[in-house]
Image (cartoon, rainbow, N blue to C red; front, side):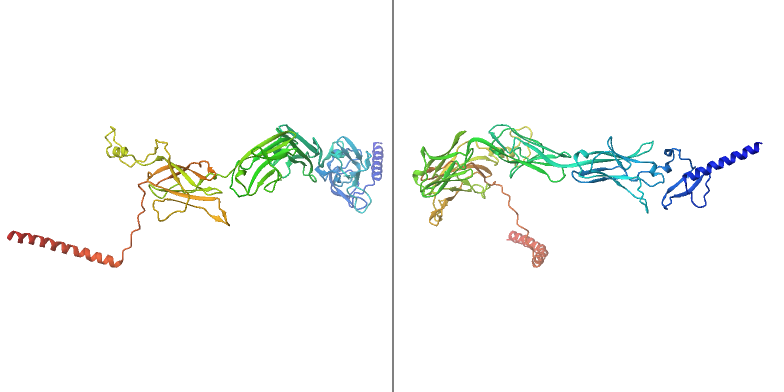
Length: 569
């Protein structure tokens, strides 16, 4: 009876297996049996001939959790990346899986941060700029693999964030793309506006506000000039000038740049209002009767100042001989055919609503200050030829030369005696070598030489000075040159000299001190080269050297014979 029962159970079990195979309709490939045994290295192919991959291990029924079998679960082919995209462009974020037979069992989902964008082929948000793009179709069919890229058109700043492509498995499987939207720089505002007017001494602040991603670098520059702080630019959104003056006036530019698109810039014009400021080009102007001269004042003022010229206390008007003109801040008074009465004090005056300023200068016919041009080291031990140049628009009538000894490097007589007798003044002897020591002059006495400008007279030896002046095109050349030979100076000494010149208008100012030196007594003399000796000279010298002993012996014999003869006589 138990045999019948066992056979019946076997039939029921075979029917169940047959029903299961017919339900799934699976083609296991040629030469493979449909049993519950193990399958190794088999290639799974669909009816359309597409291979989805191979697997190893035991086959299970459809209720098995595929998460426990990696061979059934698709893997991501793409990896998460960072995308830096300029605003307004289009980006495609990829999400691709490898192909397995069970791809349909695991749907994909796209999310932005925590917001679901799509699940499978269905979009969860209403945004026409975002589109799902199938990544691949099964070859030879219209079947689309469940793998979708995410396209975002006309990218906006709000699209910045993390985009997650997630596989529908119990264990979380996903890739993350980071989207950074790059925004070109924009200058939001420049404070205080297009124009700034400040009073002298006020604190000035220029602020530049910008936007963009990444955050732009803001640079302040000044048109055609350096920045007031000495730099060519200032990398700060806020530019602060502690104290306003005329040097900060100009057009300032704020530039914002983050390397995305073109830099943005905005300009602001800065003006400073202040009372007039005057600088004279020359405080003393040397000229002469009959010449033309220009007096120059540099005048700075904002608002613009009115200008007046005065000679002594008399206001000057524009005449045939007196003309006024200006170029920018340079104001010029031009005087033609100068007369003796035109000499004197001149003043330029500038005034605006904030104040008034005056500056004076002197127009004189006296010579300009003389300048020495001779070398600082003379050629002799006790003489020195000193020379100088003077500018005078009339003939120089006389010069006055001052000079004095400053110090000497000669050895005094007392020191010479001490060196010759080292034990005279000291218990310990000194080394008897030649010592030089500087000795300052104990007198402030200046030697004074007065001379008249005239040509050097070669026939008069006592005339050791000479001067000359030139006439060019009938006009006097204002440059005069003079020289004088100083004699009986102390050797190896340093001297100081000054000079004055006088013409028909008077003496000029004393020149700056000039220092010169005389040479020492013990000037080293360079030895001449050894002269060459000819071969004949060598031969004659050799013959002479051989003949010298014979003549010496003969002279000795002759000397003794002469003595003997004297004794006999």
